[in-house]
Image (cartoon, rainbow, N blue to C red):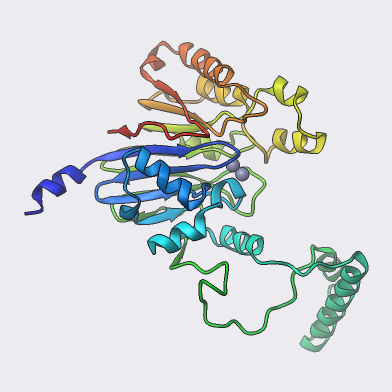
Length: 332
Ligand SMILES: [Zn+2]
Ligand SMILES: [Zn+2]
């Protein structure tokens, strides 16, 4: 009775719902499993785009999160709660996400200094009591760290209405440790980016390998090693260097984007495609394009040029992910 439905389910599909600094989200279907990679759109917009792309939100099984920046987690809690599905994080990302959501007590500088002094004194007392000599340097370093919100009273039972960090279920994974969600094998890998514990993913189902590698300041060897033997590669092509340099961002933000924990430029992306990429993916999707510091044509031309320098890579279909509308589903 279900044979027809089962047959229809045997498919691998990758749909970019949004990509860019205002929101990132993709849907990956493998066999009978469907997962969201990031939830950087409001739940309402996320569902709207899924329907536009011919995907049914009610069939989602899980959300996997690359990192805690707002453009990747904006609709996370609402979407997970509405669907009652688990969220997969690294522990560092989960903690950072919770810190982002929990309102902090505002403190004056004087209050902060006083709090640090008290914390250092408390640690010193603890260390003295414990035994041995306290490590003064360590205490000083800890005291200088960013102030934490005061410890909450013993946790009440988690309830969505009371606790903004409440989720139906949380699963932890670690970079370098592959895991499965239903029919999809997920391999998270560390990326260089200014978040708590950011990752990219290789997702594999029915022998089809798809990678998401956006939000990285440069292309380190461990990432290049992951981006091999793929059928689909979604690669960041964030900014044009000249546009960024001459563009509207304040100097500090320009420095952040350009840094080794910022974002991949068109030049860096095409440098990878030209020199390191094995050319095996049927689809290359350029993603996370900046609307302020890039033009789709600049990103496209740089990547096309890089691919054209390898005659063997011309079979690669090059697509540009959009910020404001979903791409057509890519089916394997
Ligand atoms: Zn981002
Ligand atoms: Zn980011």
